[in-house]
Image 1: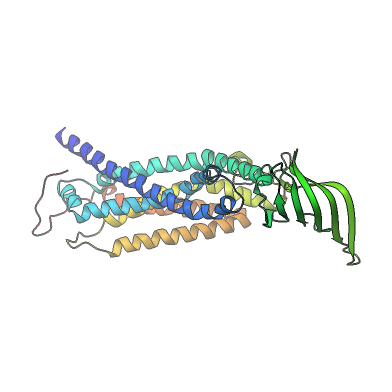
Image 2: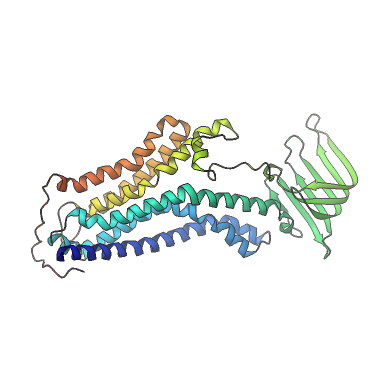
Amino acid sequence: MRTGRVITRLDVYMFRQLGLALIAVTGGLAALVWLTQSLRFVELVVNHGLSFGVFLRLTALLIPSLVAVILPITTFIVTQFVYQRLAGDRELTVMRAAGLSPLTLARPALALATLVVIACYALNLWIVPLSFSAFRDFQWEIRNRIAAFMLQDGVFTPISKDLTVYIRSRDPDGTLHGILVDDSRDKSAPATILAERGRLVQGPQGPRGCRRSAAREEIAPQTGRLNLLTFKQNEIDLGDRNHSDSARVADMSEVSLSALLNPHPQNPKDAPKWIAEGYKRISSPLTAMSYALIALLSVLTGAFRRQGSFVRPLVAIGAVVGLLAAGLAVDNLAARDNALIPLMWVQAALPGIICGWLLLSPLLFGIWRRPAMPQGESVGAAP
């Protein structure tokens, strides 16, 4: 009973250190990645006058996808760092000298890795698709519904990739003066529209420009001649024609797992990519357990050295980096040829199975024994 209480206290002690470190490292790394990713949306605030609250709401929807990617990596970092620090402080020496097996020492990290795997499944199968869907809907709303507020006096404002609007000035009542619209959404007939004045009105597909005393210049593709059409009043849709409420096509990052495994994309050639994405959502959480076992194998096995060893941690880091690179390559290959999808499971689970076998094989074959204390070491009190 006494030994059982000591082991339980050690489990709680080590699990607490691992858990707090995982929260801190994951939060810090996610904040750093979020900052770099959000820089591409700063232009909406600086050049288009969107509020900072809209910017935060838009970029915050990217956080679940960032966490899902970095969580297995931070699990490895935390496991490697915490156990390496315990070894450097001789705490692992005391625990091993007290008769604790590698499985007992690895138990807190395995429990944490199990929780991370569950969290990754929740993110991949539920939270991330919802957040991506909300992100794309909100992004569409910004580009189409409130495009009118993006127009700045004396600035060429890109409403979309194929639509740019310029206004010379704006009256307090909303009347626009000196309007130029470069519209190349119709690739067969790009046009430039000039107008002395106009107003913005909200239409069913987004903002529309109502122009007076306007002229439309268009180059005929057959003859290359400039056609000029003048009119007293005309309207132009400033919304994105490809992203209306009824026509917005869902991306594979925002659909459910069942839709990915039974795909019906707009382009039938994308079906293999959808299937590969579905299996990636199922297999990628297992990498968290594999990475944790790699870290445990590097710390809890091999001969003990008083000065420590940098070889095994470096090998573990190199192995994880290699697995990350292999994962990217396997994902791309599986997206092209679904016959290679089993490689995704091999890349995610096989390293963990091998490391788990190497870590626990002494126990399975009954050859583990209490390691002798290094010369000059004394057993201190357990934490």
